[in-house]
Length: 225
Image (cartoon, rainbow, N blue to C red):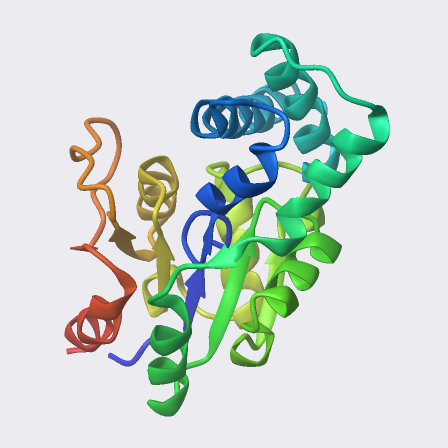
C-alpha cells in the first residue's frame, strides 16, 4: 500500500552534524571529540527534559549542551563566540545523498515531511541553507507537543497531521533510538544506518535498514508492495 507520506528526521539524517567540526576547529584542536560531546549532551538534555516534564526548546538545550561541552573540553571564548557556534545548527551541510533521494521521492509523487526535535525556526533555516526546503511539504516540530522524541506523543503528531494510521507513514531516521521509538509507535521505519552500527537491542525493530539515502527509493517501493 502506497504510504501517505515519507517523514524524515532532520539532524543527522538529512543534515550532517559532523559538518559542525569546521566551525568548532576555531576553538579546539579536537573538533570531532568536541562536537561528539556537544551532540551527546544535547540529546541527553532532551531525554531528561521529557522525563522530568521540564520542556525547553531545542535551541535552548543546544546552548546548554554547548556550554557543557566547552567546560568538559576546557575551552574558553566570549559569549558571542558561543552564540555564533550554536547558530551553525542553522547552516549544517546536507549529506551528499540527501538531495537526490528527496528529488526521486518527489518525482514518484511522494509527500515528504520533516519531524524534528529542532525548533520550527531553526529547522526551516537549516533546510533553506542546505537547499532542501523546496523538497519538503511540511515541517513538524516537537514544539507542538512540548516533549522530545522518542516520546510516542511526538510520533502521534505525525499521524494527526496527515489524518492517517501509523502504518501508512514511512519514517526515515539515522538514529537507532529514534528508529526504535517510531517503530514502537507503529510507523513503518527505515533506519538509515550509515555507520553500520549494531542493531538496537531494546524495543521494536525497523521495517527496513539501509546504508544510505541512495537506497531509500527502493526501500520505500518495497514497503509499498
